[in-house]
Length: 71
Image (cartoon, rainbow, N blue to C red; front, side, top):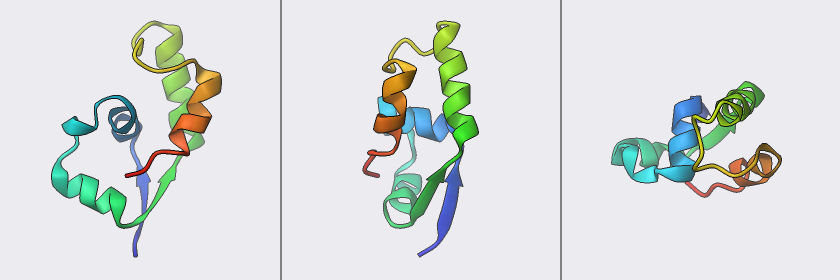
């Protein structure tokens, strides 16, 4: 099993539009250890604050959602 640090965009897509992620990438995510940078969560909070991510929950709920994703 390999370890991967996922990009902010992959994290966003996995939460709101997983169909945008290639099947091969979804397989990698499902079969390996996946890490999320705290900076990615900060980036998402900023995007929400300026109105670029209306589809996501409030930032306080984001942590729970981000760490409960099943790839």
